[in-house]
Length: 126
Image 1 (cartoon, rainbow, N blue to C red):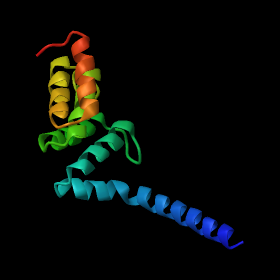
Image 2 (image 1 turned 45 degrees about the vertical axis):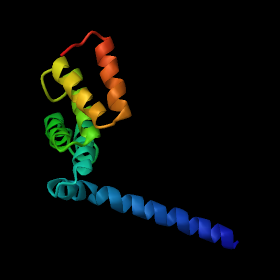
Image 3 (image 1 turned 90 degrees about the horizontal axis):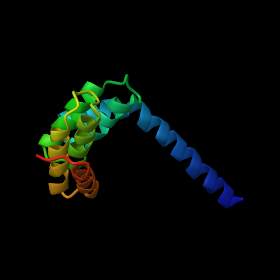
Image 4 (image 1 turned 30 degrees about the vertical axis):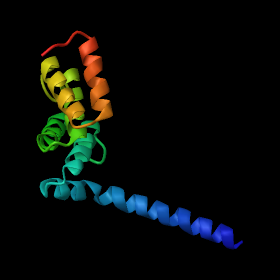
């Protein structure tokens, strides 16, 4: 019985924590991004790109990824590369996509390197 009660308490507290974190996450992410915590800019960009907890705004996502990438956050560069490759929120530009994936790779992002190779294998050059 004790084990069931403990398990129930853990589950219940996890649900409460998850609900609290999603209701304040956008504001928290904006604050952190504005305070030079660039991983938050990348996460917030993803929220705007996908319309999670905010109105979808792909241009805003690009701006947030750009901020993160300029501050050497690899995932921001990778996401920016994908946006340029697909023409999401910006005019499609495969050359910029290649440059941003190259930067992500230089910043030691395995996914950035993989995406760079994928773009190169599709015939893209600088």
